[in-house]
Length: 141
Image (cartoon, rainbow, N blue to C red; front, side, top):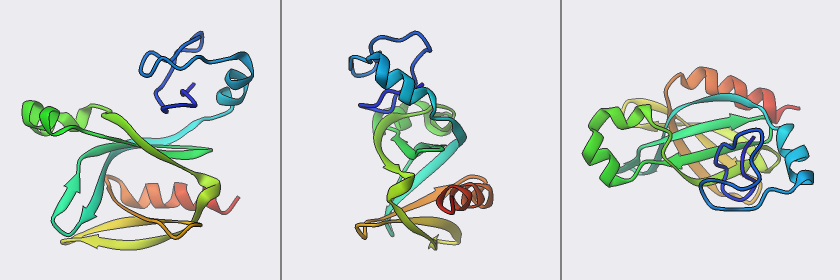
């Protein structure tokens, strides 16, 4: 289960989110339990040509959740920070994704998520091709 307020993963018996304190009522739990994780892993957000934000992505059957790593955590842990999930930053409902485009950051290929409102989010994923297939499978439903 995931918190409907902040996206934090919850235990099956949670009444409150341990991350943000949000109260989980029984109707929300029923709704949240239907959400299933499809893919998760290293996901760096490309914010500009010179700024890449380290993070973690979770793709569920309902949304894409992005969690970023803080600079303090990156400085303290170095490359080991990629083994952590980061702190919730935002999510994009699958229903709000209009299209996926190929992008680049240096020599690396990225995936650009374009929302129905025209916002673009550029991400570098480990196993990019698998992420692309999973996104396309969800969008085509």
